[in-house]
Image (cartoon, rainbow, N blue to C red; front, side, top):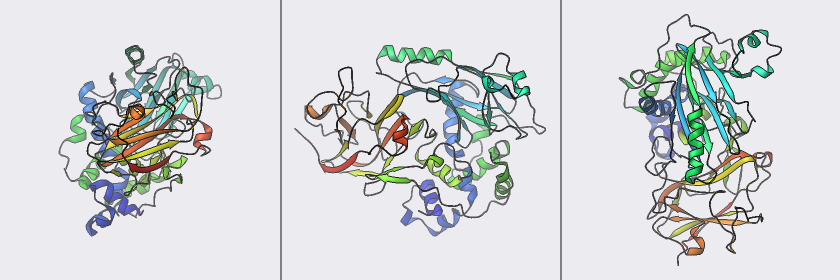
Length: 461
């Protein structure tokens, strides 16, 4: 798919084949591609700042997402989140990471363009404790994590390490911190344990270690959305002009090109996005280099911001998409049709890993249904054909099992109820997201065969 067609489709929701000539010409402006992630950044940040009453404060989400949750597209129902919009224009930050036992967890740090540049969590067996999080306006510090326990050869850092466990250097002056904790079973006691962890986490400002020679605008709601055009292309340019001076390209060698493009408003056509990995049974997976942290691949960054904003790097999670439908990743189901997903075995995962299959409607929000069931996962009561449980205390087999996706108003027989994921009532367009958190090396390297999908008549009593 050419970059210009992809951009028009993403911005305006038009089918690629029906994109107007003016849209194709508009898409040659790399400013739109470069600045596109700032649109979902603002959409995400404004309500978060409003609820938390400012930047650099945590807002803890205590309940799982439902069909009424529209803050982000393709929400997951596997984890509870905390959210903080970060602003380093006048302060450094201290982030307190609590001790988490016996579950998947991660504190992912994102820059203003949704690059996931640092993850503190169970996958990395990270040090918990106190971290200084900062932005270097001079650009001399390499973005990423510096642990005090590994600073013996860095005299200056060693001298700064009293009372803290490490330093996190942000590539941009604004960003997002989105801690998440996996549910084990979702019962009230499990939720309360996560609430306790959320309460033990913390964030507060400290005096900036380095000050900018030039004043930087603090991150406020007014700065993000006042006098912003309703036209998507114009809005992207306006946001890029406001935010990019405080959030330069991480790759210093790319700064001149990006700055020139933003000033001139026109530039060369973007290179096509990195090709996905080879699909398996019509499943598409982004390459390792193209997920979560995008470098100078601005077109891929734009594409992922549209398809699944704030994705993690592949060491933390995989997000394969089924592309066997009539319209690629968008599936269509008739009022009396169904999809069967046949898993060859349990997906191989690392310690505390989990997987889920989530259904979303045409607007990319969770599907409303009477069961309030938005996903099936390794924590669901799914069964083999003989009725025995796939997962659970007495589940030892590792055989093939099947999941059923059919309209929410067409209930299957009782023997399928536990394995039924409701699609939109009456059928229509929808999408499915398969997620693997803490994937094993075998899963990341393609050694596990993805589910075989077939479309058929609905299964009814």
